[in-house]
Length: 109
Image 1 (cartoon, rainbow, N blue to C red):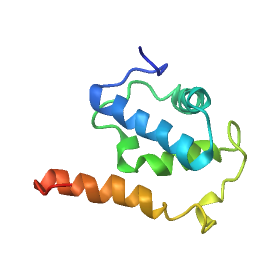
Image 2 (image 1 turned 180 degrees about the horizontal axis):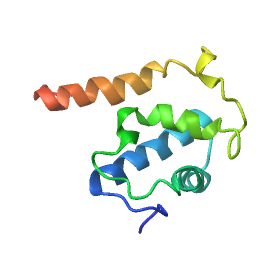
Image 3 (image 1 turned 180 degrees about the vertical axis):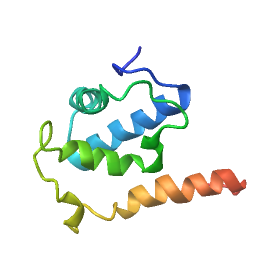
Image 4 (image 1 turned 90 degrees about the horizontal axis):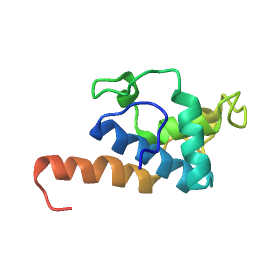
């Protein structure tokens, strides 16, 4: 089942799922609400290709941008100055960066 209202590649679809997971885990959103928010936030960005600018940030960053957006979120544009929100939690950093680096280097996770 296609969850997103915009076109994705296989890789960017997985990335969007990670954003949804961050919205659920770190923002307390339901799956349905998280998908709805991602769709609203990126609905006018066109196809999410493998070389898209959105991939320059991690899924946690985008989840925070979406959750705290001035229109669809709670209107906290300065969320990145809140030490409880930024930098990303250790559990996210370890899962996203460390496990990915180990996978790419061939080290066991």
